[in-house]
Amino acid sequence: MKTICVCTSVHRAWDVRIFEKEILTLLKRHRVIYVAPETDSQPPRIPAGLTYIPLKKTHNRLLRFFRVLFVFRQLFSLRDQVVSYHVHDPELSIALAALKILTGKYCIYDVHENHSAAIRDRFWIPLFLRRLFSAAFSIIEKICTPFFDAVVCVSDEIAQLYPNTDKIVLPNYPSKMHYHSIPRFDQKKPYILLAGGLTRVRGVLPAVQAFVMAKLPEEFQLILLGWFESEELKRTILKILADSDKKNRYQYIPFVPYRESLRYVKESAIGIIPYLDY
Image 1 (cartoon, helix red, strand yellow):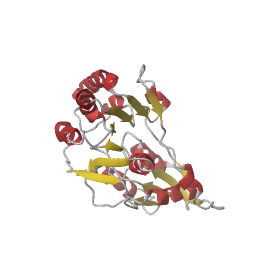
Image 2 (tube, rainbow, N blue to C red):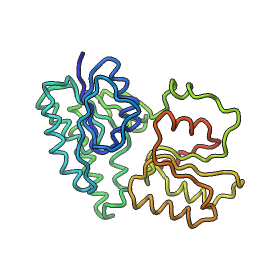
Image 3 (cartoon, rainbow, N blue to C red):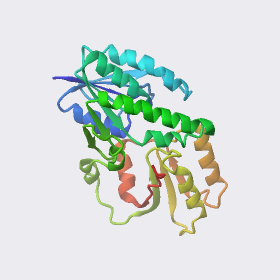
Image 4 (cartoon, rainbow, N blue to C red):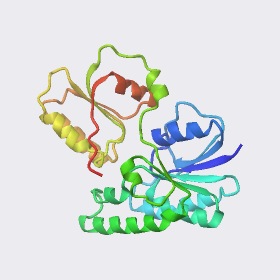
């Protein structure tokens, strides 16, 4: 049985796309070494064949770029144990290209968003530097991409950014098997659901502002289901709600297991996908 290394230095260890979909699927035929940030939470189950190597967290965003060297060393040390590397973070693109050059292993780059465009919305980067960083990342990624054996993209639009590359589009759709295992609800609950990563790029701020301004029947509630990208954004969003006339008409649920989150999706009357345009 072959061993595959899956790595993220940014996403939560039990991320739905990475853990619930990719890793649990790979474990049906392979062993997996999973390099991901340390966490206090546990997965719904500890699968056989999985080795989890925790990375120490850093709360300084700028230090994430310097952590690439540490992560590269960790991945390189596994070269004799694995047949391929599957990496999920844009800042690890250089590390993945270096692994391909030095080890010859099969290397896969997983793209969750248009990173170059997303950099321009990173509020914590000074405005005058965003264009510079965005252009620099685009150049670095173009240099590294030819070294990758394949690119996994979350949408057709993102796939178009990687011409002349072996790629596959794997959208973030719910698992059919898990979704259909949940009983059907004859009566939907009056929930307006915003689920997943609660981030600026994904439009959580305008979505909440729209909810506050909208004239809705009294029974409707907003459900925020997921993790905020920062404490600052969490405070901003919860203050907007607390200061509004809908302060008693929302729920913030930071974490539930993946299958339970699908129950909210299935029973809610309205779902919102307020992603910004990139």
